[in-house]
Structures are given as structure tokens and as C-alpha cells.
Image (cartoon, rainbow, N blue to C red; front, side, top):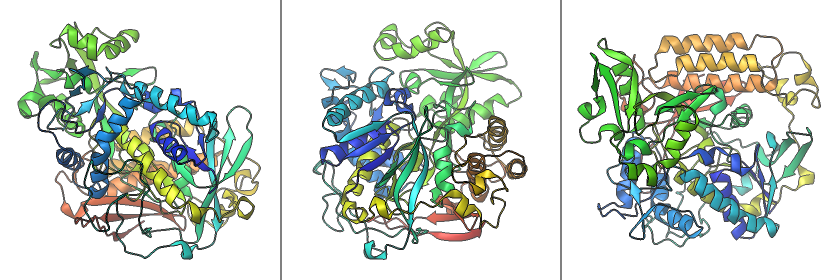
Length: 614
């Protein structure tokens, strides 16, 4: 098999690289920055797994149920079953690599996190992501020395290498049911009795909307410093993170995750799903043009939200939700903050009160969080309440993948936050790092299984489909204007996004895709995007980003209900006819929106119901 190309060197990318290297499969780690600066380093709170170290009777089944319930029942239950089933082994693997999890009586300590009935979040103070990344980076270096992992930091993904031709001889029997690695055909996975590191045995499933006339056989990347372009053959795994750059001043995430890679893939016809599901974290602070996250760990250790009502503190979450209080799922907390601050007798500012947390807990579990707040000149959380507001934190939607992390383009895979998997309409805190690590493993095992098939697409057989070749036949508003970007493949095809266009687009999206949404504002935003397309000097990257923005808006308009992170004031109730993933794909220059409705049985069969909406 050709060397595997992994775009992204955070948790998902490193996890995939380790899985491949342990099977002696060479891979490239391609990233805009070194792993030490990946978004994953910023993850603070912890990683979930039903270890039951706190003696509360936790189980893998409860973890699965909490994940599906928080996701409002639209996550793939079979995928969630695999995620939660492997969680204990993943945490143990991290501990074996030296991650300094907080411990009690020798056991990994676990804390409460929002939307979970048990204490199941393992943590390393309030810097869990940083500690896990350090351990994985060190482990990957061993395989770099052996020549199995080759790093390309400071390189940007520019395009896929795509070959024309229908590889129908590669497809397995259609309609068959994927099985988990090492499982007897048709059986229900039993965890944690599965052999770790086993390679998936499954008949490949043909995906709805599969690009049957095209095969991904490599990618094009560019050196950030020199501008040099390089083409590499081989399977491609996207692990490029969320679309933070679409909301630059409102996100807690790194702006290195610009969303440009996702926009390019969408323009190529790669199917996306769940785009309307954007998670707002309840507790963030404005700093230097973006948002600083105050980890959910603060509430897990006893932090309380309040607003001043008629001049007196009102701990509204505890009154409205006595069972979970401040640890309700994030979508619920964010909405309640919106509602109470719009009440006539309430102040518009919400505060996080951590004064009741003991000094010992601060020192042992929250010292990094306190130090960060003081570093940015914020109040000392031990002495004063912290003013907080909601900020865009996580994208539940992204590249649409199946249970084996395959996309609708053969030999293109995705894992981590850039793909739509595991979280449904709302992600549980503590499931993000777990999903990235597990998803990277599954994607890598799938690539290994399909390796023999992908190897027949040798580098000399690659036909690179230039963007300008596609644009000539686009009969829509996304047909490129008559400029060098549409006529000269060596010209301005890969110019970066225009700052003014980025700012205008971000404003349109944020004003229409907030915590509370309604049709009029989203339609106005669509009109605004249409006007942006008419501006002079647009780069192809600008056009791709505008197209992706339109796909997000159309997905939100299509879902005429309220579910999880998607709340519509004009459709405030849940409608079970929308119990599934809204999908978006570019076909013939237009954006087609469908719903992939799930008929879940024990083997996880799904079906997609199409509604003609473009």
C-alpha cells in the first residue's frame, strides 16, 4: 500500500498514525502547525470512560445511553457503542503512555461532567489535552525514528488528487451490515473483551451519494513558508479539526483550523452532515479577538451559575434543574443563560461562582484554570465571581462518515472534529478527546483493510482534476468569474481567503446561527452570502467558504424543529420526522439537502430519506 496521508496532527491524526505505524504501515503527518500547537492541546476538562473508579455503578451501557440521550437520539448508535465500549481501554492505554491522570488510592480519579449520571471523566488537573498530546507526541517520535511516520509541519492541505473511473470491482455486496473488529458476523459487540488493535473484518458498504466516477488517490499540499507545492499519492485521512475560522471572533478554538480544508472538500462533492449542530459552550470569556474557555471542570467541581434578579443572585440552573443543576448538557445551559438574561427583572450578565470550591480542590484539580484566568487579567475565581457568556466551542457536524470512518469518496476518510460522528445534536463534555482517539484508530484500521485495493492506483496513474476544469461547466452562482483563478491552474487557484470577505461572512453566520434561530434571519444571511459572491476579487477559497456557509444555513433551515444545539423559535418543539442527520452535498453546482433517517436495530442498519431541497 502507498504511504497514508494524514491531514492534521492533533489527537485524531496522532492516534491514526500510531495505529498505522504499529502495523508497520508508513504514513505522513501533514499539518499547518506542529502537534504542540494543535487544537487538542487546549482541551482541558478530561476524557470519558466507564471505569467505575468512583464506585457509583457506572457501566459502558450507561455511557452509551448518556451519549445518545445528550445527542437527542440522532447519533449512530452502533458507532456510539464502539466508542463507549473502547473508552476504558483507551484511557488505560493513555495511562500506560505516562499521562499523569489525577489519582485517588492508586486509581484514576473521575469527576462529574455535564449530562452524565455518573462520575466518569478522567482528568489531569485542568490540562488533560496538553498531557495526552505530550504522551502521544513522544510515542509517535519512536516511529519517526524508524521511518514509519514522516512529518510535514507548516504545510497546508490544498486539494485532493482524484482519478476518474468507477472502481466497481472494489465494491463488496451492497446492503450488508458492517461488523465490529473481531466480532462474529451479526453479533452484538461485547466490550471490553475485544482484542485491542485488531483489524476490521467487514464487507465494505456502498454509501448513499457515493462519487462512483471518482477515486481519491492522493493530495496536494503547500509549504506555508516557501509556497512549494507537493503531490503525494495514497489514501487520505482528514483529521483537520473543526471549522473555527468561519466564526473567528466567537470561537474558543484555534483559528489555525480555518475551515478551508472542509470548504475545499465540500466543493469537490464530499458529503457533509449535521452542519447545523454547532455547540455553544456556556462559560467563555472574550480575550484578544476570540473566546477563552472556562472548562466545564469548574462546574464539575462545584462552580455555580447565577444572574442578578432584582439585585439578588439567582442560581437559576439549580432551581430549574434540581437533579443535574449546573451540569445539564451544554445546549440546555447555553439556552437557559440566553432566556434568563432576556427576562425583564434580570441583569444581562451571567456569572460563574467558584468561591465555594475548596482551596485544596483548586490546587489539585483547577490550578491551571486559575493561573490562566489570572494571566489574562481576569478576577481571581477563588475570591470573585467570573462574568461569562456563551461561545462557539465545537462542531458536531462535518464530513459525513460511516461507522468505519469512510466518506462518499473512495479512499478518503475522516476522523476527529472535522467529521460528523458520535455526538448527534449535542456533544457531552469529555467525549471529544475520546471520539478523536477512537475515530483515529478506526479510520486507520479501515485504511489497512482497504490497503490492497488502494494500491492499484499508482502515482503515475493519477489524473489531477484541476479546479478550473470543473468550474468551466458550473451552471450556477458558484461558477467562477472570468479571472485567472478559473483559467490558469498555476495562477491564483490557491490564494488564501480575503480578510474582508471572511469578516462579512462571519457576521452573517453568527447573527443567523446563534443559540436561538428563526427563518427570517437565516434567509437574510443567505441573501447576504449571495451578495458576497458578486464582489470583485474573490479567491477560489472565498467561494468555497461561502458555499460551505450556505450549506450550513440551508441545513439549519431544512431542520424545521428544535433538537439539541439547534433551537428554532419558529419551531420550538421536537419533530420526530427529523430524527436523523441532515446531509448536504454539492451536485451539478447546486447544494442538495437531504435527511438520513435512521432505523436503528441491533445491527445498526440505516436508511436515507431524501427530500428534494436545493
